[in-house]
Length: 220
Image (tube, rainbow, N blue to C red; front, side):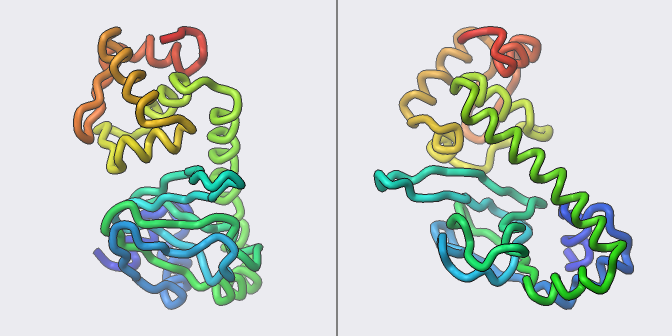
């Protein structure tokens, strides 16, 4: 795949035309990380933001109690660390959950480009506003919904086919629960014939009930 295709396929740049994509290409570099390798640590100086080509990246922080809290999992065609454009330090850490290829866009060069191209700047700001709205909704789910509703919302947000490229332990962390509690929830959902989750595949058996669980209208 060409760099042009990879940049265009990222949601952050999906509204850009070929000429605008060509302006970003010189600022981008391809990097590879092995499973478990840190991409950057919380508090490290910001150098750029990232697009995931393949693999998956866990964004997390370590709480005062020493426990890891997963904030978000980023998969192919998604971007992360956009806040690097406006901050001097990364507010969280990023770790590759599998063999992962990313494109890193240099922060200072990208900001200079935006400063000299108002049209491009407005397009990027629009994409960032949409991303912030998604993060706000995800944070609302995490703080106001119970675990079954959070998981139901997560499943409904997945594209077809419903393939999960991260471990069930990581999904549990992302939902703010333990692996054991998550396993019990999966068993209840399977017994109720709402969905099954085997290997990496999720199969929805009863979408109306899953939507009701996501909305908090049904307990499971």
